[in-house]
Length: 275
Image (cartoon, rainbow, N blue to C red; front, top):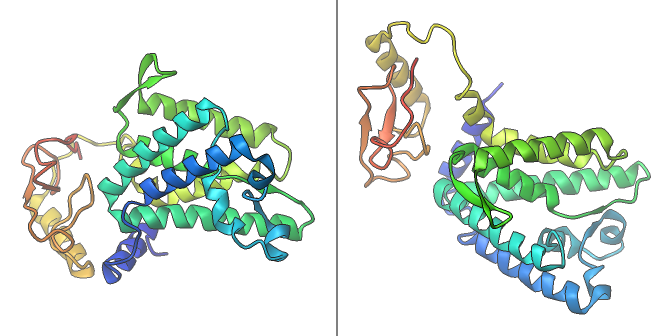
């Protein structure tokens, strides 16, 4: 079975113009407009969430407009729009607009497909992007776990601890929400695992970490992998390659166990590999 991220990387390599630059900004602007609509016109606002039945009766804009529904029409909803704009723009800068766009689209499509399946089974479910944005938050926490934010605008807390809280909320929703609503967090988490599962696995503790590494064998392994890839160097932190960024310099870290390459931004700013 092919590695999903390898398939995604190949797709993005073959379609370098894929993606919507500034997508996080556009989502924030559209969500802000929707937030205002929710304040002044509740009737119009009701035409925006996803409804499979409504889409099949011609209201096809709901396939996109549901992504703009804010978490709340109160001032907390406006704050959440800014918060997810910050998260989304950071991920977009880190991943590139193509990968970030694909992440949003895949989570959207998974949610839409679930909506139609539930409708076919006789469940009329109105869908909002709540869990899609939670999945975006999980992705941010996976790559930037030690970034601090002000929880409730008062308490400084690292992203990884908020992610643990979010994971507990997901688990609670799956266990307590009535079927089929409890499938929504499951679908969102699948999209997150598709893109970030490898990052999580790389952080799991490994046995025999003190084992001596055969650098000749490791270098041969890297060269074999490079023959199957479309690049020569790939940063072990951000994933950027010399094919996508030809002017970026890459180096190998002498303090890491193994044969690991890093870009110029991360050669002195990474957690050293111990195996």
